[in-house]
Image 1 (cartoon, rainbow, N blue to C red):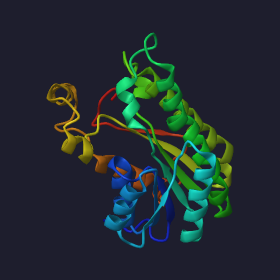
Image 2: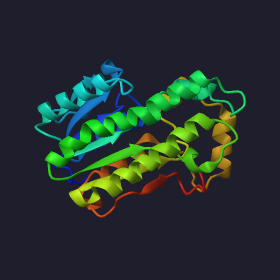
Image 3: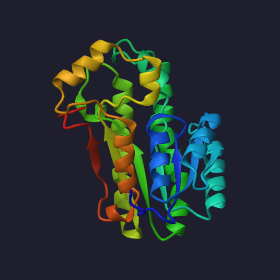
Length: 253
């Protein structure tokens, strides 16, 4: 394991479980100083304890502007500034109600947009001034292959992720000359530890991805964390405005 993140001060939004938790652990292994933020603050605290290296947790509801501002301010104060942010939060519960454009309840659409798009804009607005004060920094968002895959279901989720990728490109274009990089990690089908433990995914779905994909296994949270760590490091200073697909070689997912 390299120490390419030594001294980097990073907040991870959405860090209690899954990809966010794996990213906190990976960043700590590479030497970053970390704040783990999540609406599930107990989970974020567990993540911070597991990561070590002085990581600490703060509560955040990314749909609430005041909550986001307070979390980022606390992170910046505790870390002495910010050099990077991984904005990863999502409400995965509503995905199971995200049917199709004719049938989906608009409350599902509103909640999906509130978290996956508006919330990410709020996080961006909160962290950018701190990154600019540090004379540059990196923002990494978590998107999905669904943004470009053209699925027959989950339209709200796909629309929110498509919009998130547009936000990322805007940030890269507007502030790139001021030392800001903004990129997206777009996971393919990723079996998190929580999904494995909870048995949420039917075996038929797992078999489908294993039989149709280009890889010998399914994605893991650590696969996404490794790429996020690279994008938050100085190794990625000339990568900006990009969608990095981490999907085992799948065309879409």
